[in-house]
Length: 67
Image: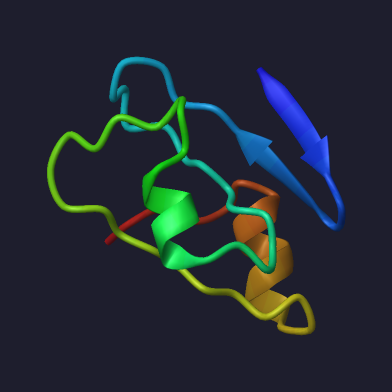
């Protein structure tokens, strides 16, 4: 399921499935961790990307994965 917000999209994770959740810009860390559809299975990891970088385009196109 996708929820569109100002300048961003949130992809919801169900039951700690390990799916990416994109946090709407401007949200606090507390708000991100308290998202009602986000179940923290272990330690949350945050990737902060610049929209002006070439890596952002590669990352959002799905052409990147963890090493």
